[in-house]
Length: 352
Image 1 (cartoon, helix red, strand yellow):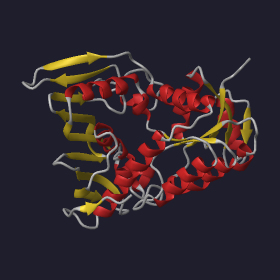
Image 2 (image 1 turned 60 degrees about the horizontal axis):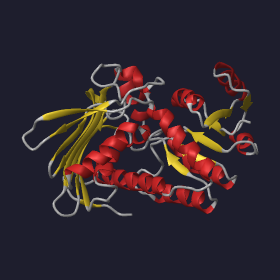
Image 3 (image 1 turned 30 degrees about the vertical axis):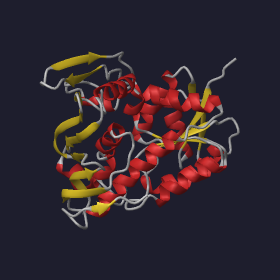
Image 4 (image 1 turned 90 degrees about the vertical axis):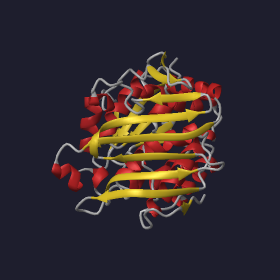
């Protein structure tokens, strides 16, 4: 008997290819169907990925009683509408970030409330949080004592001038209102909040940002101030060499991850972001004198682990609201940072 969770994919966006592979690699889930606004496109994508059922509208997918949960990699402007529609049809929701609401958490609050009211899970697509390494890092932070400061970043160089000047969703505010702050910034901000156990900072500051020719953020650096003189710096964007890191300073040492999002070490294998990749197998701990220890962990595909998390929650028939809190906290901070672009260098209060 097949007890796998049946997932419907709502869109044939580029990221859906990687997540489709991960779903098929999970022992707890399977891709049941795919939908697009075009039946022809959905059918082509289904055939290419060996999916039996294709729908020419998202409503048709949501009306299928055999679908347990949905993966939503739609454009940011459509995520609220289709998350709420999915929740109202009692479908559990895995939604790709960034999340809607550039300067406010109101949209996300409504999305999460709809899921909670309907008794379904809400989970965003932050893959690295689900890796085996991340769980070991959490334990190591607890051993090293209270976190006092964090530095994090995610940058890469735009492949060409057209891409940089609005030729990609990340660099066109009509598709992604927060630009690279919402896309790349989600990761270092999430890593900082992970280190501080999802405590909201008191204030944030935009230290510097850069716009492209279509007035979209392509570079951003910021500061977060927490209680008791704790703080964090981050930067993100598409104007610098590839960096994906977090340094977490604790009372009795430091934890460092230098391949946070991709998990491919310093190999330069940028394609790991787009492949069904197994990695995230080591991180570093420095003692008070700066002596480095390399901590090896079991390698894994953190995208598959994310699907396992989603499927296991569905199978348990008990939603886990801690994931709702993590999404909401991360987006709340990003919204405050986006507002801070209007007051560069000034402290902006973080509002729930």
